[in-house]
Image (cartoon, rainbow, N blue to C red; front, side, top):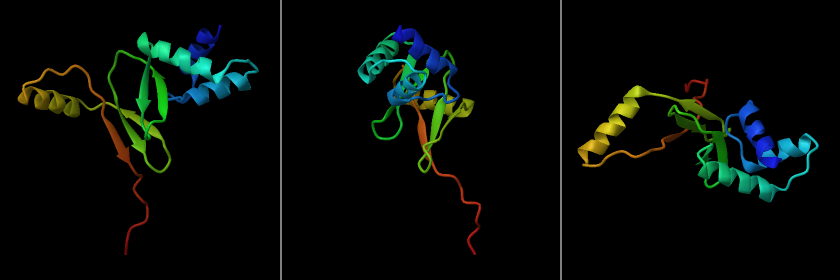
Length: 124
């Protein structure tokens, strides 16, 4: 059953954010036969059911991660594509304050910081 295999790949991957193509490659590498369209369809169903979360970090290229009860934000390295998850109570507090100051009630949010590694070389 492709659904169970796709879920297993997402749950056991060393990489927490996988594209549909990453999942497809893992299935093909395991010697199984499933179409890429099936992967996309199942991931969309998982997203609708709240099993996975979809992120579009680099201009429309979607990646998926298993949904969890704990909120976290992301940093994406613009050079390497590395995604780093982080939690910061102060950022969360300030976001709630800003929303309230503007007369709104926060329903959900996503924060992605696009970063670049600092060079270890010091300018002269």
